[in-house]
Structure formats: C-alpha cells, structure tokens
Length: 314
Ligand SMILES: *[C@@H]1O[C@H](CO)[C@@H](O)[C@H](O)[C@H]1NC(C)=O
Ligand SMILES: *[C@@H]1O[C@H](CO)[C@@H](O)[C@H](O)[C@H]1NC(C)=O
Ligand SMILES: *[C@@H]1O[C@H](CO)[C@@H](O)[C@H](O)[C@H]1NC(C)=O
Ligand SMILES: *[C@@H]1O[C@H](CO)[C@@H](O)[C@H](O)[C@H]1NC(C)=O
Ligand SMILES: *[C@@H]1O[C@H](CO)[C@@H](O)[C@H](O)[C@H]1NC(C)=O
Ligand SMILES: *[C@@H]1O[C@H](CO)[C@@H](O)[C@H](O)[C@H]1NC(C)=O
Image (cartoon, rainbow, N blue to C red; front, side, top):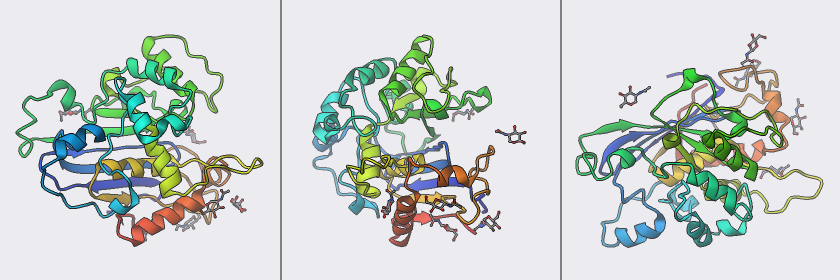
C-alpha cells in the first residue's frame, strides 16, 4: 500500500467485545485519518465518572501499548451540555481558558452545546439506544467517520457531505463556539476575529456535530508534546496540530493506533503540504502556532516504542 507523503492516516484497532466501528478523521494542514476498529460496549464509552461505578467487578482488559502515556485512557472525548462543568471541575478544565479548558468561556460552551443533539461517541446510541446494537455487537458492523474541524477549516462543499460523518469542533477561542451556535441558529455570522474567513454554512446537521473536550488538546500539548505552560513574552504560544490532537483522541478511545502519512518533507519547502490543494511545506515551516520539532520527536518516540505502528512507506 502506498500513501502519498502529505496524507496522514491514523489507524487504530482495539480488540474488545462488541461491534465494529471505524473512525475517520481529518484536519487542515495535514490530512489526518483515524481509522479505529473497536470492539466496545456502551460502558466503555461512558464518562469516566460513571465508568468507575459501572466497571467495578469487570474482568481486567489488556492495557493498550501507549497506556503509560495517559492518565486516563477511557475518557469520553466530547463535552455534554448536562455535565461539562462537572467534568471540567473533575479534570481541571475549569482552571484553563481556551484552547485547553472552559474557564471564562462557560457560557459560549453552554450555548453551543445546547444547540447540539448528542454528545455520544457513536450515533447508534442516539437512534438505537438500547436497541438492536446492544446485545448483538458481535454481529453488527458499523463504520463512523470523525472529522476534526474549526471555523477556519471546515468543509462547506456539499460534495463532502456524508451523513455518517461525526464532525468534531476543536474550539481554540470563544468565538469558535459562538460561530457554531450562530450557524446552528441560522444567525448571521460576523467574520471578524478569525485568522481566515470562517465557513458561513455547514454541511453537517446538528446530530453529527460534537465539541471536543479541551482536555484532549491539553493532554496533547502538555503531556505528550511537553509544551511549557508559559512562553516567553516575545514568543507565540505553541499549540498541537490537529494531527497530534487526532492521535491523542485516538489514544483515549482506541486500543491500538496505526499511523500513516505523518511525514513532512522538510528538505523542500516548495513540496506540497497536503495531497489536496496548493499549500506547500513553507506554510508549516513559517507557522509560529505549532512546534513541528516537538511533534516530530513525539512521533518518532511513539513509533520507536511501538506505542503506534507507522504504516507510511517511503
Ligand atoms: C452511511 O452508512 C450507511 C450504513 O452503513 C450506508 O448504507 C451508507 O452508504 C453510508 N453513506 C455514505 C454517504 O457513506
Ligand atoms: C522532498 O522533496 C524533494 C523535492 O520535491 C524531493 O526530491 C524529495 O524526494 C522529497 N523527499 C522525500 C523524502 O519525499
Ligand atoms: C491550485 O492551483 C491551481 C493552478 O494555479 C488552481 O487552478 C487551483 O484552483 C488551485 N487549487 C486550490 C485548491 O486552490
Ligand atoms: C524553516 O524554519 C526553521 C525554524 O524556524 C528555520 O530555521 C529555517 O531556516 C526555515 N527554513 C527555511 C528554508 O526557511
Ligand atoms: C520546540 O520543541 C523543541 C523540542 O521540545 C524545543 O527544544 C524547542 O525549544 C521548541 N521550540 C519552540 C519555539 O517552542
Ligand atoms: C514512517 O515511516 C516512513 C517510512 O520509513 C518515514 O518516512 C516517516 O518519516 C515515518 N513517520 C514518522 C512520523 O516518523
């Protein structure tokens, strides 16, 4: 199999009881795809708080290879309107402002979440709840598409419409939440305050949309990439690329992660950045928002330790 170098694909497989799920996920800059085959039950995807109660007495499962990287493996990655404040206070999200927490943005989070229909990991829980899927997990296969987005990087082309996609907002600033709320309410979008013109319409329906818990991004930044909490005044704060956020998300919901296409061509700044569009490597090299050195070291490390499998070939 041959992947273009600009394409990033993440593949994760878990061997648990249950039904088959595949997740695809993509983002700006690199195109990241997360393919996750999991064998899970609804218990597995529950909030950690509930899970502790429900999991008691269950037989141990094998730990994922990368378990040592994480404090919590089975963390529900999406915010829910009903308990996001409680979850934030349990996991420290109330002590960080965006992009790594909800501090001072509780109201925009509440509004945006109130416009969504679900915070579940998989849609079948919405439509089927305790119906045919549960109890028949061994027999039913299901593929779900996850796509990370933010206002400046969301598909608006209806060719990309896919009712099976779950679109995950990665909020970097309070305005991102207001943007989502306004869009879902059909209000006019004020384009001021975005680093690139934000999308003015969505190809996703409310049932498809989730909001990523900033805990995931915070884990990527501080625990996986070891970014400092404070940057010198003359330096811009660095944030993880969506690809690293995607891997972090995968670590929290998968048992096995395979990567493909996480490969930059640093030797030629004119080489294409993605397999689509016209962006070149120079965009990434010039980026003061990310630290690619730290990301490359992280990727090398998790590949060397066999925490993930690198599917990319030269
Ligand atoms: C969505 O999933 C259903 C059920 O698996 C499938 O029949 C359908 O073709 C999928 N739609 C798209 C656009 O992939
Ligand atoms: C990087 O780009 C240069 C110029 O386009 C090309 O010659 C080289 O083979 C590329 N390197 C890799 C590892 O793909
Ligand atoms: C890329 O560049 C080509 C040639 O200049 C142009 O036709 C095309 O529209 C560009 N594509 C994008 C996505 O900007
Ligand atoms: C790419 O960025 C690095 C770090 O900022 C810099 O040292 C290097 O000169 C840049 N490369 C080019 C070709 O501009
Ligand atoms: C980027 O990360 C590397 C490795 O952690 C570190 O040595 C370097 O100082 C960082 N650069 C910036 C600009 O933060
Ligand atoms: C994965 O392997 C390919 C082929 O050896 C290599 O070019 C690429 O840099 C590796 N990816 C990472 C993130 O190290």
